[in-house]
Amino acid sequence: MKARRVLPLFPRKLLKGTAMSGGTLSNKLTGAVLCLGLGLAIPGKADQLIVDVVGIERMGGAMMVAVFNSPEGWEDSLGPVATAKDSVAGPKVRLVFQDLAPGPYAVKLYHDENANGELDTNMLGIPSEGYGFSNYKRMLGEPDFEESMFMVDGETTIEITLN
Image (cartoon, rainbow, N blue to C red; front, side, top):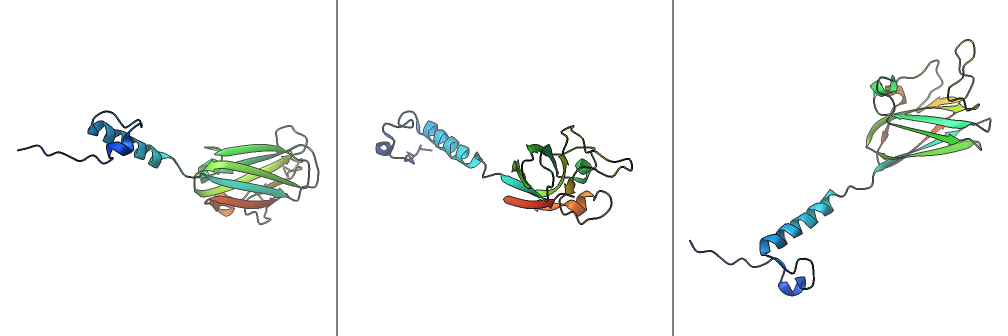
């Protein structure tokens, strides 16, 4: 069987002076495939979650926010997938969480007014500092993950009113 001559994919005139101008056709093709592959491997824009906390009555301290993506994390066996802390200087605080995968999430937060790193409670165990949950509907006790869940897809903004 006779070997056929294969025409190059890129004419030498176009390649002259480039990194692909020398070498064999197989080296050039390998380089072209690697360049194309690297271009395909670059991820698109990651999803982000913007949490606006409103209804803040006392200035000072810090807003402590935790983002969860599963019921197990919500119940503290796995913990949050992201956390943030921001100072409270006005009636509204905005926190932005970058690079989240699309999917279900839920948020817990509290206003650490005295900056002790804890949600303070009274003698009955009722919070004495502001707190909130995503999709909170003013009920007694902490909602479960499914009750607080929302979907992140692209840029997602939620608003939580501090209680």
